Length: 500
Ligand SMILES: [Zn+2]
Ligand SMILES: [Zn+2]
Ligand SMILES: [Zn+2]
Image 1 (cartoon, protein in one colour):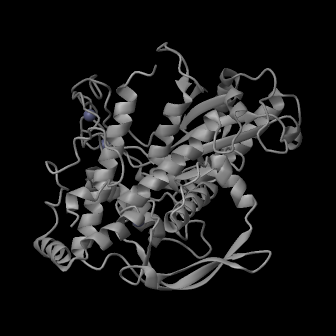
Image 2 (cartoon, protein in one colour; image 1 turned 180 degrees about the horizontal axis):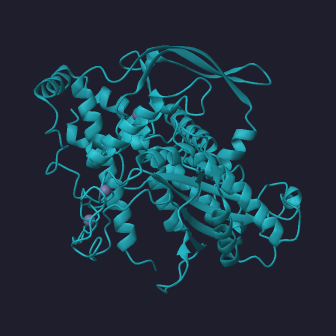
């Protein structure tokens, strides 16, 4: 019988992973008594091994989708049935499919796949790979951060420096001291909260957040104009000399307002494969200057909200645009390395607001932000620009995408997903027929997609979501956690093992 501790990463070589083997069973302490009983039932009833296989096949998804039905793979040209599959072949008569949720609080296993795909997508736009030509790594690339302006002083972590040293007697109109002599650590819960909540402009904060996606849109338009002028062409003809590509993520700062991080790349005029060498004479440094220029020019006159007119919205003065190179240079002042930036962006792409277990979300500051949104939303008039504001309270008023990219920045997440599914299917087919798994790289899988000669026909019915018992869910979560720990350990080992 397979024991629980043997299931997490079965079938792979562990090469000394400390979290594997009899000495370190899966962490099931948080599973309740009924979960433990359910687990014992599986072991005694002899269904543990079959369930463990099913869980492994969906990558230990926490709440897989359950389907019943059948499908056949048919040769397009001849109509011949190449293979067929039915859920009745499965040990429990049900086919489990990954939930695919990108939020870690819903499904840790599936959100990790999303994070990995996002990393691959962003990385391919920096150094090439996954069907993106390597020559993109020669194009000017800038890592850009656009922040919100100040809505009032907040407590800030300043790397050991005092937060807000001021004359001890100076007070605001609410009688509160305007000084803070503490040196906050970055995980200090006060960080991001206002020095005086009554001085803080909650209304302006919420209205800025609501229009942040519009500011980003205007920024991309302004940037094209700035680049066109620098290259001596009208903006309408920019695409004849250059195209701007980007991958962008929105991330909440401690004060509860988003800022944008983006990798912006300047390609030459569009070619058949969509990735042209960058235009002559524009370095990453020059591109960084153009982006800073554009960010300073962007503005949007927000319509009044519930009688509040906050005037022209802008990005904060603190625009950070830094050159990125594809390869590492051993110099602390050298430009950022693409690989690191890709990892950084991918991490934030998966960290949506609803997902933060950040204790700040329960703070008075966040409560007041949400109350301000509810207040403003209650005042709306018909056909108001703010009609939907109240539906975004849980996002603190941010209605944009947490992660997006321009069309030709890189490969799409959809193409990555389809390639993975094809790989899994080929692996499953090989396993079933007892054939050896062919060695395939990504290009093969992509090419295969274009030359698809077979068609899948089938009929499936949705019968539910999630594992049948708390015990199964607890086991899947524990195994997913173990797999994550193993991947981390392996990555760390690869990082610390010197390359030869
Ligand atoms: Zn899942
Ligand atoms: Zn402070
Ligand atoms: Zn005050």
